[in-house]
Image (tube, rainbow, N blue to C red; front, side):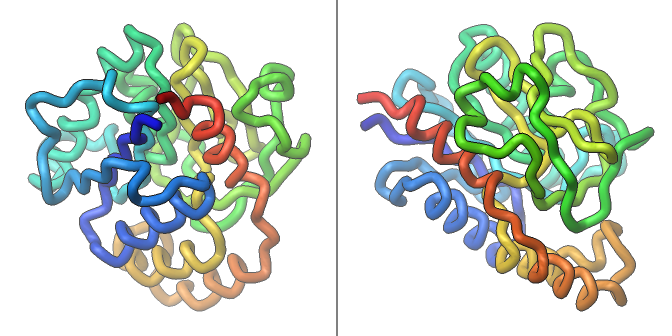
Length: 246
């Protein structure tokens, strides 16, 4: 099998390692089945060839693509530039891509700069997601129930559906929870890799990053631990099962 390219954006080692382990666990991949690149530490190889990979998976991160350049740290700007540099080829070729949380910002920004903090931010916690008519028949959502809970936490969101995209999953608080461009380029606002353990790690790491009042951390951890969030992980497994190529 060709490996999957895993691009990670989190500059905190504990958060990055936990996310990578979750992606492997939920997708059924082993570390040997992937090329993992932490973009906070390493640039993309100059000779990177997408044909050497089954697909690309982009994890989440604390940056916001809609922030002005002078509000981004050098690391955030470098990470964003690296991921954005791949999007023209990915969308032109309709190459298998799954962007998780930050990934929908990257896709929406590339397709039409439709991402902002104007509406649809969601506090750290769960969101009541529902399949759209198109989502009910999309292979990436096979096995998911009509309605399901997913972990979320984001300051910016897609404000309108980019041209060429299909709307797959919605929620009352954020309409564009999952979209598809073409036939093979997917992005979710929710975290398909996240479970309560992983969100506890992130809550502790990011409690001073403006997602929620720091004093609410323990309450949010308890809320996440009480939530039954299992369905979203099927998105990762479906992506790998569909696009694994030799």
